[in-house]
Image (cartoon, rainbow, N blue to C red; front, side):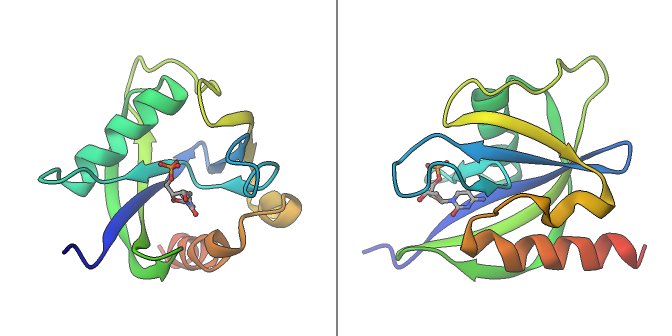
Length: 134
Ligand code: DCM
């Protein structure tokens, strides 16, 4: 039995802004904002899962940059891990293709303007801490 499944999420950064995505499904998560991402498949590297999920959900070409230290519990058996990521040259701009109905690039002073999923709040906070110390 698998005891945990990693969900990878991206702190996608561009020009000093962070991408937030508003979920359109499932009903219990709809309307709340998240760092976009999804489940790592068996045998898949988390960084590869991140790039795949962002391509599927947002139509972008990205690369994972570095892991944000920490791991946050979701509904069992899922745990959330976060990587910073960037758009690769020539990537399309992100568009809400599935799972989301709105996207926002948040400047540093706007990060807490959106109602994040409860479980994403500590991950976003840790991401900001890391960015602030570089
Ligand atoms: N999830 C989350 N926070 C994120 C990304 C995903 O809480 N930043 C949750 C929502 C789903 C599960 O992880 O329950 C899998 O995500 P998805 O449905 O996007 O594959």
